[in-house]
Image (tube, rainbow, N blue to C red; front, side, top):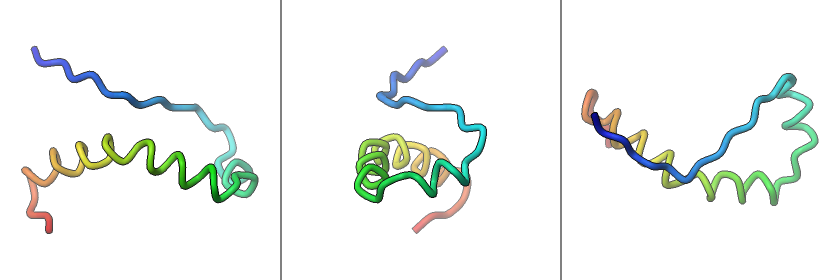
Length: 53
């Protein structure tokens, strides 16, 4: 079995609309940049199944 350690964290949202409307753009950008490595890993994994460009 293969384990991959990812530096990612998550939160559970009950009301995503109110969260997004209250989220400051600067914090949103920081969250996106912080999760970029994880996102690219998922994209690369899924590109093996379908053709990505």
